[in-house]
Image 1 (cartoon, rainbow, N blue to C red):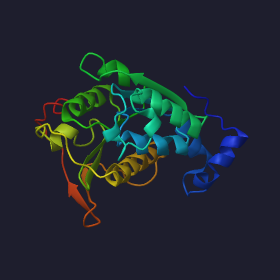
Image 2 (cartoon, helix red, strand yellow; image 1 turned 180 degrees about the vertical axis):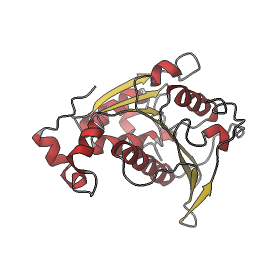
Image 3 (cartoon, rainbow, N blue to C red; image 1 turned 90 degrees about the horizontal axis):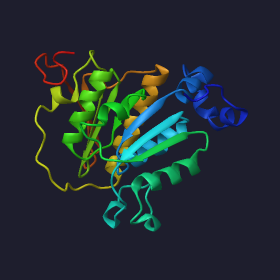
Length: 247
């Protein structure tokens, strides 16, 4: 666990957010003690990791099994032209460590599957979904429920995005809202969409850790970039849900 005591440099670095009402030094120390699991080092993982690191999260644990490709660069802003062919986990670690040396960055080049997901998230306080497929999201959803870890879902498609926060045993889970996975496809996406969604996911993490504001509990927030609108869809827990019904 990261030492929660803030150094003089950290107090100066985070001084503007420490000024937020209800945040303060105590909130910053809570953030420093927190480990966040980021599933995916791509379009959503980039803004999520950047802004969590900028906020002073104590430890980031980032898992991805892919390498940087030219087609990634319209949206995966932590990967640059010079990184093509490099493991995404390596590229992320270089950038995040350069952004904030006070953040512990653990990157793992591995596929998240049913054999390792419970072990991977076991030492984490929050799980952030930055994946591009529902099969892995469902694994993370089940692990979050089993381990009683908050799970922040995020998804993008074209100019659109969705965010929801699950608190195990308290709220609807991902499977309650999406009982069946959509068909697999190489989906279209504009780079700004994961930027918007990822930033909202970070706000959810910070609010949860510090204890500020209202989380997106039992609320699916839908962003439409083409109309510049946000729509809130209220959801509820399915008592017969195959993932959380017995929780």
